[in-house]
Image (cartoon, rainbow, N blue to C red; front, side, top):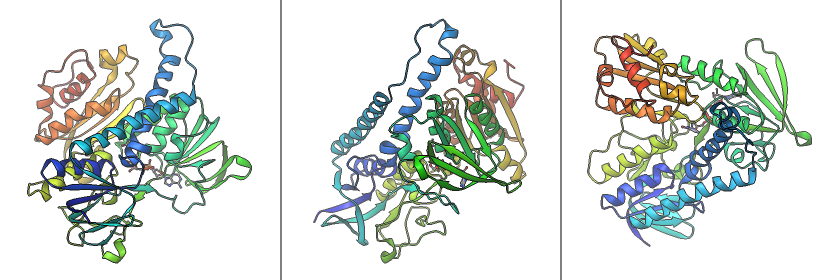
Amino acid sequence: MAQYDVIIIGSGPGGYVCAIRCAQLGLKTAVAEGRDTLGGTCLNIGCIPSKALLHASHQLHEAEHNFAKMGLKGKTPSVDWKQMQSYKQDVIEQNTKGIEFLFKKNKIDWLKGWASIPAAGKVQVGDETHEAKHVIIASGSDVAPVPGADIEVDGKVVVDSEGALSLPKIPGSMVVVGGGVIGLELGSVYARLGAEVTVIEYLDAITPGQDAEVAKQFQKLLQKQGLKFITGAAVSKVDTKGGKAAVSYKLRKDESEHDLKADIVLVATGRKPHTEGLGLDALGVKLTGRGQIAVDDDYRTSVDGIYAIGDVIEGPMLAHKAEDEGMAIAEILAGQAGHVNYDVIPGVIYTHPEVASVGLTEEQLKEEGRPYKVGKFSFMGNGRAKANFAAEGFVKLLADKQTDRILGCHVIGPMAGDLIHEVCVAMEFGAAAEDLARTCHAHPTYSEAMREAALACGDGPIHA
Ligand code: NAI
């Protein structure tokens, strides 16, 4: 029986980052992982493979829609789905093998198998029980069933995000249940590859919680790309008789019932914490009302020596949030002052254009009754975006009306997911919009739009 300082359950972005930091800080560390490869949902069946398909399908979109405009004429590429799948697989393998390499480099043991916690300080994997001073649960999340609906994910006609990454062929038509992040990213992929995609969303707008102006523009741009939207509609049933799907939904405004046929239905209505099989009940580990593991500010559960991070606890289910928590708990266990600033966690949707946000939305500021100012700048005024057919979005910077301190930023546009980080850094330093506005930005770059939005919080942007 091996004795560790720390055993982490789960090797997703929360678990593997935590393990590396623990090892770097001198703690003898092991990670239990039951999958054949490291990296969890993110690397195997989530963030990374979806980005490969988004990248490939975006290249096709560019070839079909923009190449000729730039004088690049000739045969438009056709889709070899098998090859695209093997490209995606190769990307997964490079990343999961990379984590294996990092484990070896940092002398982290991989306990292969699904783990449970028979008692505090013990982790059972297969027939073996291992001991550790600290046990960290980083077991992630699973697809949640659609609340109040009769929908069975059969992996053939009705798929979840995992199934949608590996469909045997590109469907002629697809209904996406849920206009959230997963539905729109994967819906975009199949729309670009030629499927007729209809998104059915329960609320009146897509991407709930997003800045309303951004969400509106986002839907408009996705519609331009061919996606159809039915909003304010609850999907209640999917019938798969005869190998095709009949999707029943009810419009909330008038309770009218409708049907829609499709080759494939993608269910993307949220995820739930993965806690099954860990033995938490018997241990007395307390859960929140929403089934998450309850933790204090230092990620301690209700049982001494057991901690939890990532999707399995409260907060946004984001890989980078889990990573930050993984580093923080490692530092806390090593006697340092680990901390996550939950006010500055960016969110990104990797469609084209990308959507990215950090901090408060205008709706939240209104609700708080906090005086604020808005600096908005359209990518139409950005030379680089115009040259690259990427001028359809905007940057919206929100700052405190009196102090000018940056409170939030919402971007829809090219490379938004990268651009947002300049505001994240600014917010971490408690910067004012004027600080961004006075920072020299290289020309011509998309990042000038960020500066222009900051200028718009003061005496005004130059190119508008
Ligand atoms: P989500 O919570 O983002 O969106 C689910 C949507 O489904 C909501 O808009 C909801 O109103 C709608 N819905 C629920 N029941 C419905 C019904 N019966 N009929 C019609 N619509 C219904 O969930 P999603 O997209 O499944 O993502 C799960 C988690 O994974 C999220 O926390 C997300 O942040 C995370 N994720 C993040 C990514 C990123 O950061 N790029 C990528 C993929 C996932």
